[in-house]
Amino acid sequence: MNIPSTDADLAEIARLPREELVSRLAAAFPQAARGQANARGAAPIRGGRAAALARLAAIDPLAYARTRNHVDGAVTGLSAWIRHGVLSLAEVRDHALAAVSRPQDAEKLISELGWRDYWRQVHAALGDRIGADIEPPAALPRPAAIDRMPEDVLGACTGMACIDAFVRRLHDTGWLHNHERMWLASWLVHVRGVHWRAGADWFLEHLLDGDPASNHLSWQWVAGTFSAKPYIFNRENLETFTSGVFCRRCAVFGSCDVEGEYQQLTTRLFRDDVAEPRREPLRIRPARPWRPGQAGRAGQRPLVWLTLDSVVATSPAAAAHPDAPRLFVVDPAWLADERPTLKRLVFLFECLAEVPGVEIRVGAPGEIVPARAAALGCDGVAVAETPCPRVRRAAEAIAVAMPVSVHDWPPFCDRSGVRDLGRFSRYWQQVARSALGPGPA
Image (spheres, rainbow, N blue to C red):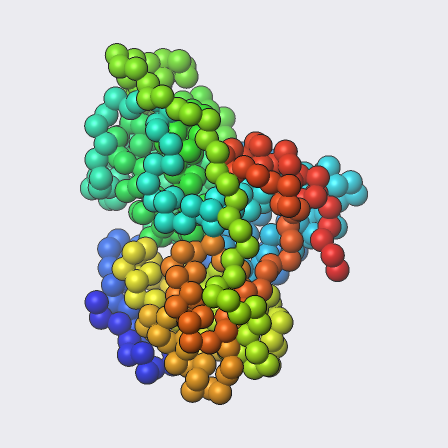
């Protein structure tokens, strides 16, 4: 893999105007500029705290509750900044509550934030195991699963107007409405027989808000390997929430793969000639608070290590040590595993450009972080809490040589009574009341 030298500080690239930034990143990370031509440039969504706050100021919790299921509804569009820690869940929740006269008016928006919090807790508990079926499929699919994305899908030439439009939008913008994600995932898994992991990995390459927790666990929810039943949709559902814009001009209207009532689709898509796998009630024990090594404090002058979950000066680690050096490490293992597109890298670097004094280097964090800490005269490392197993393993290795302190995000909800993460409904029942109240000032 052709990547920049570990001796190079890429912070200068991050501060370039957007057109130059795209060009320099394409040269520095040529693997990110591969593939579909429309996935090679910059996304319409800009990275950084300033853009995030402008978008946050525009959200309308009441309009969101009324229209969020429609592809042209008043969704927040905040997910890419939330994924990177530029906005915290608690910050968005508090803003939503401040925008309404009664807490219940923001309940729908806050409950959707709750899903992202839930996925993070599951990821922290299961680690890399979210990459495999969490439980046996709720229904056995008829198509034999294939482990790669079909070429006609990648080329947006399936003949289904809706599917092709969703694929083009994913490649063009790095973002999809949640319903579009669910429809696309359901069609790929249940109609085309694509294994959910192949689809999830494809999404993760392109989505600006892609993180393994929300992405892979959502695909498992659709597939029925982390849900009580698989998710399917029909043309009526699609037309309702798209105002029929795709169906009225579709070449296969009236004879497409999602025609019929739900029971008809269930019979068509899932096997009934063999017994379903036995499924025990799913129980997932929450993880203990993450604290690498034995040390609890990072000393008087730590190096603040920014990760993919915290590329902002207001991250809890950076906020706790405002005068400390900041470092972000582009991990070649991440580049190889997630294969982020150029759009994702541009968004990431735009976020980092707003972090004063940040260094950006390429290499294995377990080696780069302690080496830079020593070179800068730091006596430890401070990092924001993250469920990412790759970061956690690197932090454990660093903690052998120097103290690593973990700084928690502002609380979104009170999880002290949670004993099981097996289903979101059970989780939300236990934390909803605390999530609907504003956090501490």
